[in-house]
Image 1 (cartoon, helix red, strand yellow):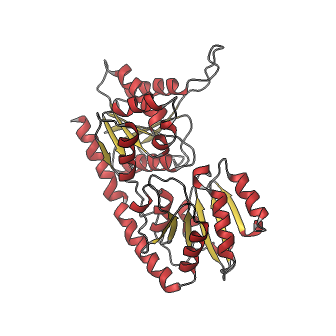
Image 2 (cartoon, rainbow, N blue to C red):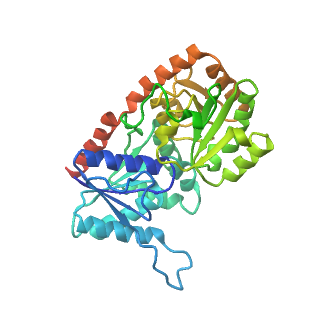
Image 3 (tube, helix red, strand yellow):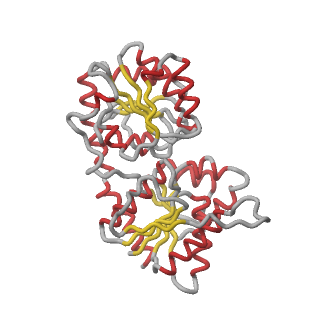
Length: 374
């Protein structure tokens, strides 16, 4: 099959999943065309059967005070669909990607029967789509898609609750991990670069938006350090980075908190971790938590959204109320101070992650595509 994929190229779960899906499909012999305004952060310099198409943002006209990216994207999607004879246009994130895909499909209607698959990832439904300026177009774009998927049962239910979307059947296909990349290791070669031998390594990975509560991660870490020698490794970048750095400075932890910025090889960092913390106020799935678990890292996360569908409370880690800073710290200390419990959680986490292996999940997308084409 010839499949076009559109996603945001920036650091975040939706772009990561979309890119990894494209790479997995390419390994299975499909021809993949990635269409976005920049190359996605997880797309390597070259991958067989994968082609990148840049959306032209150079156009300018005095009347267009704000450049209409959605229209430029639709033009590029249509261009690629016709020239490359695409069967499927799979867009990740409802607005503006599904909206642009609707326009591209309609423009291509006389030339080919292009099918649009929209995957919902979370904030496109719970935040962006709820804005008055976007609500109607978000609902319309979802309902006009040929197929719609959501990454968790929670997100499927939220979409029906918030938008109705009576005209669409939303299929749940969860996020996935590549077991060849995300797996446990007995000893991390560069763990010493993060922490002394007698210290624990605590990791958080996100796009540093307010919903991820990164300053609160630093506060939780401060409470953990009162009882356990540890360092905190923060991976990612975004609006709240300055606040998190200021919080580390205020708490006198600047030398114990490492800001790595954006990192492509997340598994390398996870291999050095003893614990992963994700105190998000909202989370449709929690891909970074799954990646941590696949590397054998217990997780302390929020009991919100789709996280309970990934993290098994009391088995692969603990789920805590988002506002309970003390609860996060206590759960972390409980795991890190008990080697036997930590080892059991590590084993359970790896076992649980196998339910989300790419070999199980990607064929579900392939089956969906084939149904659409048929």
